[in-house]
Figure (cartoon, rainbow, N blue to C red):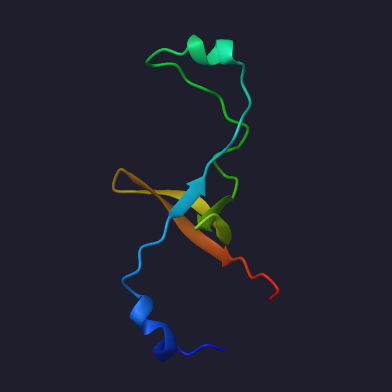
Length: 83
């Protein structure tokens, strides 16, 4: 196991963190007809869990939250990959 002291110098390294809410497939014609104010229905429910990716690697599972008019993700579980 790696000790915190062994990796502390990485603390300022920036990594890409991404949460994917949903993906859908639509036709190009559909995209051409989108206008401001349109709502695109997604295939996920608001209660569904989301996956948090770090550098495109699944890292955690979470749920959407709203605190003080800001959206966030509450971590429910970490994804542990067998190494």
